[in-house]
Image (cartoon, rainbow, N blue to C red; front, top):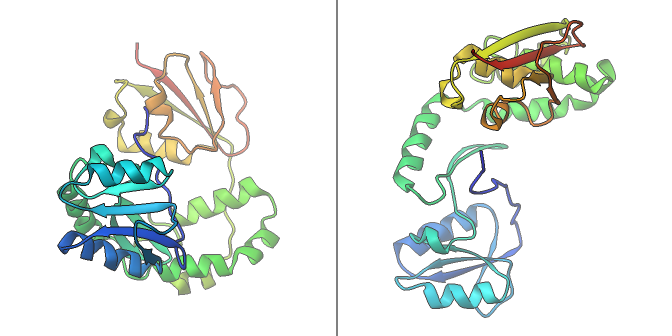
Length: 252
């Protein structure tokens, strides 16, 4: 499955960003740029990014793109090099929801749902996890073991479940986790990733490696962690490697 855009988080504090236009749309973008500490400049200044809030932006956008500037044109997704997502702020945790300009209303509705789901303690949990990185590396020097310990603690109902834990939870967590060598099999009833069961989606997300039949669609494999190795095989492995191995095949 091809992504229409690459989501990135840009640190713009003290860096110039063009804002061209006036009115409510421009004011909303100005407030957003102020929140990230960007320096707002005009079209004649030098900047790598520009936000254009004009009723007729085509000529302005063409001039900017000719200069190599990446442009966001308000309400004109066809002219945009980048779009601005709806944001749930639990700093330093930031959740961004984008639709590629297809529907700002949909992104806003999803943001409102997530606002009610994600606790205000989430930022403190993230800061506390950052503070114990050195301690965790010392107690679990193996990278894979450390990742599995964190994944287990951060899972639903775990010691550091993001929807219920806070900074104090990290202080009482010892960073240990049992590590078993396990093989789990997934038999797909459909090539559509939206038809994955909750169990199947969770197994893929947790897998240390994915062994899959040659005809398993890439869209399914993309639901696994990006750093989990993919191994093509018509049969599941006999001897499990350390951690969780997930074997995926299509139903016959």
